[in-house]
Length: 250
Image (tube, rainbow, N blue to C red):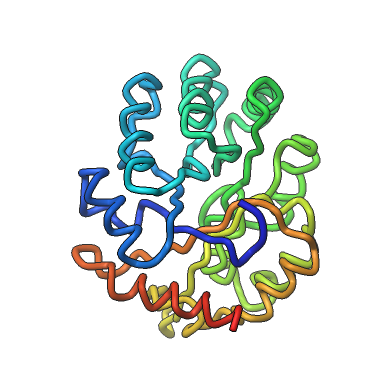
């Protein structure tokens, strides 16, 4: 994929549905043809078995652009299989978490695997309550990992870190060509800071400004919509998300 308006969907949106043929049909129904596959829809410990799921998506006209989000803990033998699955899918990216107890060992292992498989890793910024959600931690991880490791900006979780440090537009500007992935997601917040998923561009996210900043920085990674509400029937809201994104090209 290339460009912030060439986007697909995260398979986690369809976590209620376990049959990948069903998921692939829903991907096409909402109006896109690419997906980031999460562990609910693929056994990444079984590359040979995962090839069958790759074919299921390919037969439906859906390309797999990334796998994840995967938590890397320096288990090279197991993590190598994740890269083998990504290679089988034709993907060039994985989205990732690291953990405070193991990142010093895990990051170099991931870089080694990225070099071997010619992949890029995007660290998923999962809010203020998870390691890798704040800019100072991300800065250190990016420095440690070098150019094979970049950032996957999840716009909603970015905002969850607070209105000052959690501005997705500023993150896109700051990290520039180290942004390797995007999860287009939007939240509204209650007065107790509880987050609530909404159609992208209808909450606190300044969607046009964010996309413009990605374009200015020459973004060439993968981008997917992620909407986590309406678990049993996400298609209507996801269809609206796609329309909101498409309107930016009008």
